[in-house]
Length: 232
Image 1: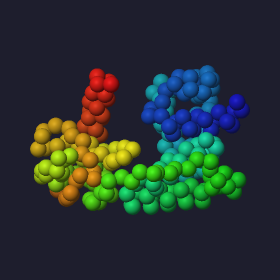
Image 2: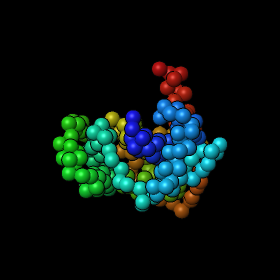
Image 3: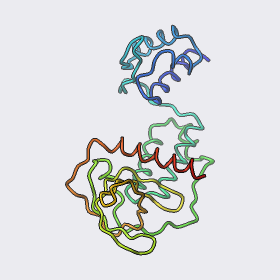
């Protein structure tokens, strides 16, 4: 591997992993010595990259307009096309348009040869099963989760029984056939999963639960994982 290739890989490692990254971790990832990592960090800084940290502390890449545009490998571009195509196929109208626009921006920043490869990707997304109709605004639900704001819902269970609940929206899971809202239900005082197509009405409240969403979502997902392991 040439040094220029290693520098690009080092930038990618700094972008992809949770900071701060210790020099030993970077050295193991790239298969070089710690001393080489120190030299490469100095080189990147000299080229305009803003990298916080020091030896013994770890390094954090601060994205900088002076950095050259990212170059994607063929497999990375195929993954982006496939992922954005999936979002266009299964997302709500707002999310679908965002995926279309993101793909357009990606094309615009690529050189001609890479743009042609992206336009003629060998991977495509096709869906043959319609999801149940969703009557609430999923974009509004996503915004409430991002802002960590409780929502009031009217929910219909599998038997058709309807209840009014205030929930703390944690995340939305795009499953094969349905969308599922992971939330804390104040009515049941516990975590619950709600099929979004069974939410009949949605209204965002003025109750904030910031900054608990990330920790609560992590706890709920861990609980689901334990349940699946114990009930294969």
